[in-house]
Length: 249
Length: 355
Image 1: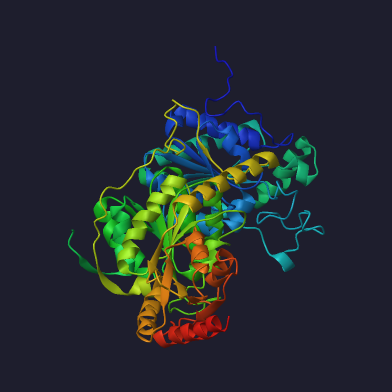
Image 2: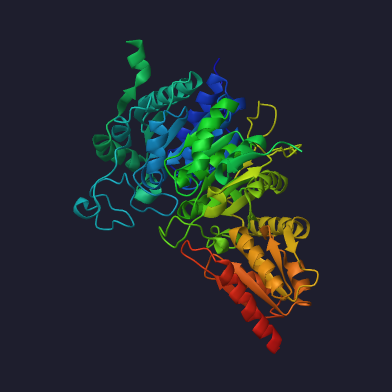
């Protein structure tokens, strides 16, 4: 009989996330991957700034909290200190794709052997719903009250597409957590991103398209629908780069 | 006595760092400290260490944070404009109570400034290295030998007090060559139970963090940190006195300014002026007590600086303005000449005599 249990890699701390927020699911997927690979004792996580800043309270492993956008640089230090460490960052879209763009691109360029979990919900959640680098054209936020006007503020950054042009990146996949089928795919991708690190394959980034019901101003089920109808067409799911698949060919 | 070797200041401090047990260096090219990175790129692979040229000074200081959080000795170096970029990380190092050695081989500013020597980051180093209430231990070498000695000292104090030590050199110290002894004897090691080494599933997770949402907790940690700072101010002050026994006038200078001042003092003494020098070696903690005591004996102070007058404020504070404090300064990459300092000493004599 299979008993549904809480992963060892999550602490007992109650999550602070809003009702309907998908961070909880993603935390669980990361924790399950860590458990299944048996790496919790040598895993060191890097928390970022934003809604997931408190992830250092939730992951049951050594954790360091980085300044806004700097998680990949901090992770580089942790990894270079002892390559036996399994090092992951957990970052949102503002952190990774705006203020931390340089750290993201260059850690990928170095093929830094780390795992990056990138949660893209198209908005700054912690500060109350401002326009993010991944906010969709026309999307209304606190700082784009008339909708994101691409003629004035430009276009969203598509991180997987951008990094797929960086030679150093080893594995890039965009997944979503809007339904059971996609959650299963997300789990597989996240686990592979850690497996790659164990095998020394280098920089792996999993972009998880997710919801922010509170700041989108929607009920959780409506938010999932909005994700499907608006985000997925702009941010297509799939593998954007995989050197391990290329090696197998 | 170990053999002496002829080395450039920047290279000497880099070798000293390796001898002090540092195996991780993260840097970014900027004049006049680039020799540190170049030296490390050659040496680190030979001692199984890590040299990494970061994409920016910001990334470099955050890589330092990463290594430091695992409990290992780590350093970065830069020059003034690059140190501005590192400021964010310096604040996080303080908030996380992490040790690190950060080297600033100063050049003229503000902005891109110039590439010639300066001491105009004194305020930044001793007061405003980033947001929030914190200090760094600030060490000011005035010879290549001291570049070496204070690199060892900087790592030791950083580990001892879990904070950043900054080696605040000026461009002259980085660029000049002098004979040095690299042997510093035994290197202390410190227990770091807080370090992120992986739980091995045997202990509770360690968390390195500077975020505290509860104001009472954050206040308490600030007070605790400043109790540690108070201990450092009591125990770790370093300075050198030169001809102060009978001095009626006191030059205060560090780094290259102290070397020039020494010549000026010798010349003034030949002219019958009883002048000496107090050379702060730690700029923070500042040698307040010795200066305050000197203020009861001398007639005036002369602060000699490569800035528009930054340390001069600390001299006034330390001496409680009991005696006049003159400023002798050159800036923008210019270095005070012996004549500049002599003129200021003579001016002090006029003022001192008038009182």
